[in-house]
Length: 165
Image 1: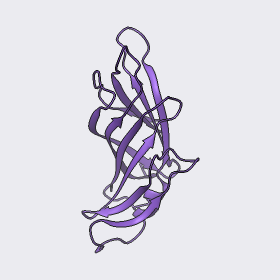
Image 2 (image 1 turned 135 degrees about the vertical axis):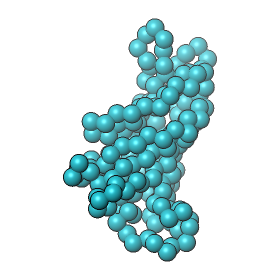
Image 3 (image 1 turned 180 degrees about the horizontal axis):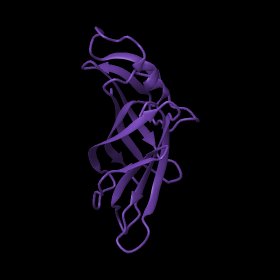
Image 4 (image 1 turned 30 degrees about the vertical axis):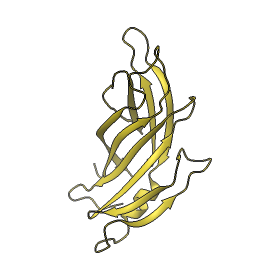
């Protein structure tokens, strides 16, 4: 427990234009992995534009800063079909947590991360100070699939007695 910096709350908001893996739709769910931790959302039936609005919480240690996200199509009698994956680096988010941000106006942009070949961002992602918290919204373009994006939001939860990053 000593190497735990805090908790990362990932709000899986929605999928956009996800791939069709059944006859004319899909039954998508998201699996999030970081290190040995693995969490998943509920399945949304027959929807290629699902809205999960579901919070998944991971513990963050000193050594792991990459999160992998995979979207699957739930199948009843066969293996679930993969609908793409993405990964993102939480280091810019953790760097923002180290700053003394108390007193800043709500909506202050701390840093911006541009889409590039080394990340899965489909548009610029901003780390912001909102309601006395560091928040990052991002839209990830899924890889290894013909189409699809996942929108999510990061928030930090401090653990009592732990020093922030």
